[in-house]
Length: 363
Image (cartoon, rainbow, N blue to C red; front, side, top):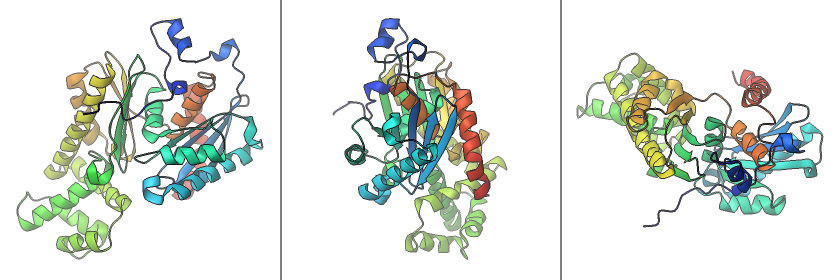
C-alpha cells in the first residue's frame, strides 16, 4: 500500500530546520532583520460555512478583513468555492486600499478532501504565486506558530496534522462525516442521537440525552427524531450543534455522555499517535487543539491529554484561541521571508480586535 504523506507542504511553508543555520537557509527562509522588505500578506480561511480573508499590513501593523460564502468544494462545488475565496480576498484588498499586485504573499487554507481543483482555478484567475493548502495546514500553523508540532482540529469535522523537526509532515483523519470525523462535533452529535435511540429501545443504558435530544430538535419523541434525521434531512452542522448539549450533560455527570467523550478522545488520540510516529516528533513539542468541540472543556480535553501523554509524556497540550485565519497569515509571512516580523501575540490581538464587531453582531 502507498504510504506517502496525504499532505505535502510547499517548500516555502516548511519550518526552518533547527539543526543548523545552513538547514534554515536550505528551505528558502529569509530573516526579516537581514533585509526582508515584504509588507502586505494575505491569509484566507475557507470553510463549509463561510470564508474569511485577512490582509496584514506589516509596516503599519493593521489588519483588514473580507468575507465570502462557503468555499468547501465538497459542499458547494469548485466554481462556488473559487468565487467565495476571490470575493473575500477582493474585499480585504479593497479595504486596505491597495492594488492586488502589491501583495507579497497569499496563502489560502481550504476545508475539503481535495484542494487541487480549487488551487488550479484560483491560480488561473490570479497568480501562480498563490498557495492553496488544506485547512489542517493552517490549523497546524495556528497551533504551533508554524513550528514542529501537531495541530488537532475538532469542529464540525476532525483532522490532525503534524510536522517533525526535519520537515516531515503527516496527516491522519479528515475523511469527512461518512468515513471518519471521529471525535468531532458531528461525531458527538450523531453518537448522542444513537445513544438516545438505544435508551428508547432498552438496548442501551438510560441517559438524559434522550430528553435533551427531543427538546433540542423540537420533536415529539425520540423515535420521532429518527424519522426527522432521515426525512428532513438534518445537516452536518445541525447534528454537530447537538454536541453542545452532550457536553453540558457530561459536565453534569451523565454516564453515557461522559463515555462518549472518553471514546471520542480515544479515537482522536489514535490519529495523533499515528502522526507522532510518522513525523518522529519527540520531547516537549506542542499539540494544539482547535475547534468548537474543545469548548466542552475538561470532559474532552483531559481524556485526550491522557491519551497523548501515554505515547509522548512531555508533549504540551493546549487549547488554541487564535482564529484559524491567523495560521494562514503566519504561513504567508513565512512564504515571503518575513517570519517573525510580527509576534504571534500581536497577531492574535489584531485578529481579536478585527473580529470583535463580527462576534458582537452574531450575538
